[in-house]
Amino acid sequence: MAEGLTIVGGCYAAINTAAAARAAGYAEPIRILSEERSAPYQRPPLSKGMLTGKAVAAALQLKSDAFLRENAIELHLDSRVILIDRKERRTIAADGRAFSHDVLVLATGSQARRLPVAGAGLKGVITLRTIEDATELRSIVADSENIVVIGAGFVGLEVASALSAPGRCVTVLEAQAGVLARGGMPALARYVEAAHQRAGVRLAFGAIAERLEGNAGGRIRAVITRDGTRYPADTVIVGIGITPRVELAEAAGLACNDGILVDAFGRTSDPAIFAAGECARHPNPYAGGQMIRLESVQHAQDHAKVVGMALGGRPVAYHAVPWFWSDQYDMKLQMTGLPRKEDEHVVRGDPDSGRFSIFYFRDGKLSGVDSINRPADHIMARKLLAANSSVTSGEAGDTNFDLASRLGNI
Image (cartoon, rainbow, N blue to C red; front, side, top):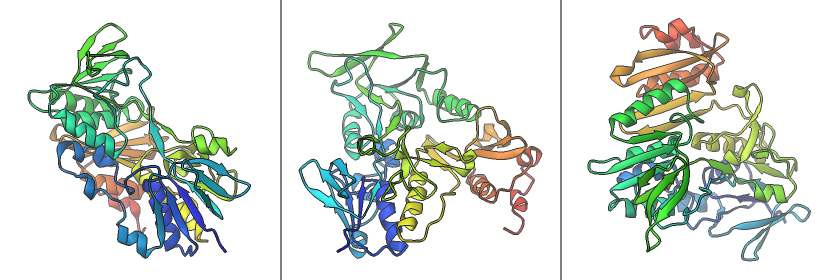
């Protein structure tokens, strides 16, 4: 009797691997083991719509219960896996249950970095990663006059924009010299930084949290930075990045290096085990074939599809164009490709209008595009990159030039 497929994880990569495997013809049993208490759900609204009230937890489920039933996908919630037995091909859950498999997929995702300072465990200090975190944050910010966000990456800035309101002081503390220092291009970062300043958000750079100060009841009341500055705080949101969850893979002896190492089809160093999504470090054609790890919803979905197709006997090497997005205030930020900070760039459109794109070039070839409220440019950039076509910097900067003409008959 076939034991089928076990998927460890509970978000985009897990549910989309199962769906893609079924669509590709995988006919054996499929079970998902998730440590969360909620069915796989959308995560972007946690730092956006859930904080503004535009999204509710009940509407975030990725696949309906009916979909799971129709595709014979078992979902085991509150099932934290603590051991992979490669020899016997089984996984062991924390409650002692054992699940046998023919093939295993690790879709364990990432975990939020914890703030390694005194006071990080005070009430009112939240690391936003799960639906429970967002629900808690939503419940306490209504009475918060002083909110401190630690970290000026995309999540931190999304939270700041969602919580900014008249009569409320929102402060963002960033250890680096500007916003989006790790994940954004300088030209985009400067524009985003100015937008937050116009919205009244207080930005402090080179600000390293040294300790968190609480009141007699154990609740946060201030953040103290290394230079001695004291920032009053009723609520603190920690957004200092994520790390891939590789502990199970490492304990099982799989090759890991800032992620679980996989080939172009998602296969690990054990041919019976795959890894999908942001826990996996994969060869990426848009990075010159280098092994990289991407942290985005779209990558998790695209990579899961590749793994699912391989499981269904229809292997296709991963080749999806990387793209990302972020909503802040009235800005729809859409980014595609993998540009480098040293790449040359040209602006298409007028930044003062709030609608423009930044085209990046490396050795005269298009390497990526950041678009602000210009979705047509974003879609076209993805097509150009996927087709290995390009435009010149002069053409990209000319709004009268038809970018689609560079696609030819594709």
